[in-house]
Amino acid sequence: MIEETRKILHRPDLRISATCIRVPVPVAHGVMMEVEFEKPVTVEDARRVLASYPGIKVLDDPKNHIYPVSTIAAGNDYVYVGRIRKDTSVDNGLLIYCVADNVRKGAAANAVQIVKKLIEEHEELIAYNEKKEG
Image 1 (tube, rainbow, N blue to C red):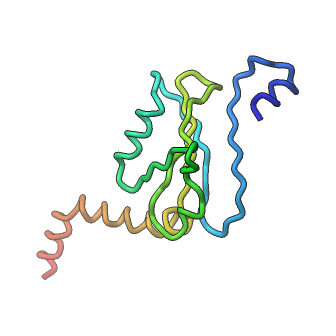
Image 2 (spheres, rainbow, N blue to C red):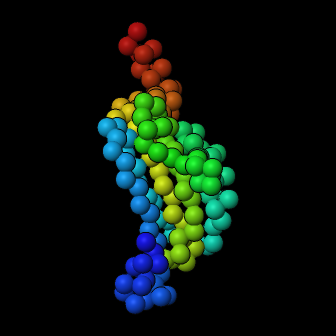
């Protein structure tokens, strides 16, 4: 797609990135993220940092057909990332594909995680109020 676009526009040096993913699935949304950093970031660093976050699973070995797809995301609360590569359209850019179950992670699971975090952060206040009321 990149080379064909350059050819059609007669712009061999056009800085462009492209990703095509088309799959008919009933659940899960995918998004291609274009991320630009102030300083250079390697693909390996991005994989390592993303893999260190709870709730994120890095699936990024396209040569062996290992990458995030909607069918693997359906029915669980993980966010899957992969297809991580340099974005040649900008300096210091990466392209990262991300997919998650839009019903669970996009709504219900997020609400539960937010409430749990609020409870953790305010346990002292909750205990005080319970003691005061009891």
